[in-house]
Image (cartoon, rainbow, N blue to C red):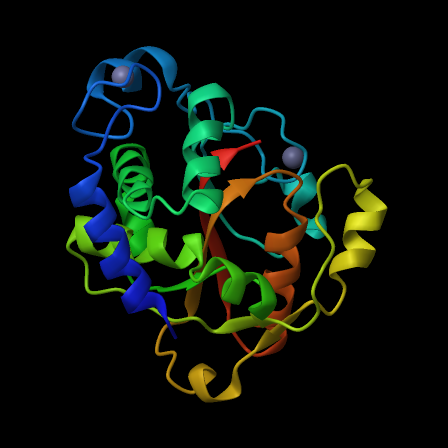
Length: 238
Ligand SMILES: [Zn+2]
Ligand SMILES: [Zn+2]
């Protein structure tokens, strides 16, 4: 699927153009340790993934009891806020083909997430539409998922179980109702791959969480196909 060539190509790029901090231009990583400490806003409080107001950690779910009827997701974990430096990081990854960035993203996620979210589950990247994927050559969510497994040394499988069936218009600037409409029936489960899923839980992986509409749509279609629990791990909260 072109990913391996692109990944090799990315490694060659990393070699020719060594990693440099996106913020202070120091060589080594895309976000150096200093800038990680001083400019990355990590999630410090747990917010409900439905109403986005604070939540006390009393149970597994990351939503208020009163919000639960509005969600198909059991837990959503986000690592950083989608501001400044993390916005740049994702922009470079998605549009400037810096594949090495996916590893830096996964490293920050590993530092902050509850690692138990990577066990007894199957990681399913949020898919790009085939057209966007062909154009871009890779799915950043899939790269992040693979790095998460490798860095955490878990044996969790990454399976591209979902595909997009329509080329959804870009979500930026759309009202919530329009987003929902835009995404209705946008995702399909691959029946062959579904047979290979051995876990009750599926964990969606994505780069940015804003309204949660994309994750909810994916969770819904997975549940319709018999997946019991759907969790999500996302790098940045918008
Ligand atoms: Zn720096
Ligand atoms: Zn809530």
